[in-house]
Image 1 (cartoon, rainbow, N blue to C red):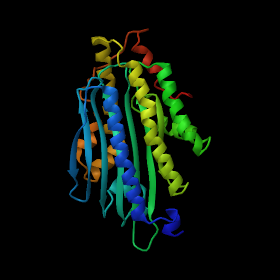
Image 2 (cartoon, one colour):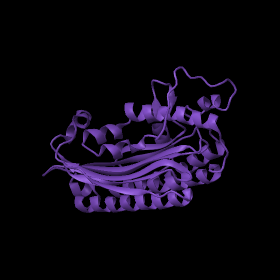
Image 3 (cartoon, rainbow, N blue to C red):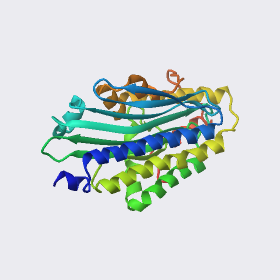
Image 4 (cartoon, helix red, strand yellow):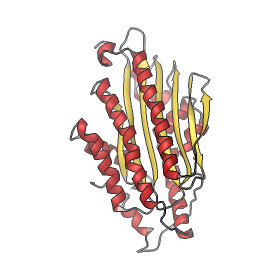
Length: 310
């Protein structure tokens, strides 16, 4: 198969520019929409350059009316050598120049009744003179509530189903299950939250269809999350709910530092540490052998932290 066929007749340079343009616009759109939903906070931009090649622009909001801390980051890094962890699993990448770009975001609200949310869409391409390029798309979004409401979780998954539907009836079940499996804390025997979508290594549909799906996921995040913010942002809470939120945020930290492949790839490729670790909550706590009171609202969270058909 020739490179042109692999990329639906397009040149690699044109493909890279098209994906980059979409990602930059997506970052703008998400930031503007979250600012409107927050009503007070604004994202500040911090551009950075990677010494080995590439860079990005990190946007962070702190102490908004709704958002305690959130970040929406764009990065585009490139180089001539993949990290050892990547080539160990994908030996065909050895000796290739690579480019990786994406938008990654995490929103940590003040209010414990508003879930934390995460989304990521990305594109990877590796080239070698005289050989076909190796490329794929990946991404998804997932929701981490502390006090779940069924209508919120159902809306989140209904939005995911709707955006997947044009690409095949098997797409949502497949990527929903992959999300449940990926965001699973093995040492805690629980999912990080209530799931969503996760996909990786997507290229079998050809470039145009794969790119269209990545865009559907990126655009779908706002449709999935903002209505939940609007429903819950005025819900009253107290110290008890806040303490539980901080405790459960600890699980978020555990996953990102122990299991998350994006964090590992970013650090191993010399990405900007502050931007990579932007996903961490501004405050979190751990408590030895914590156990919520039987029958309490806090005790009911564990019923949600398992794969469920929505």
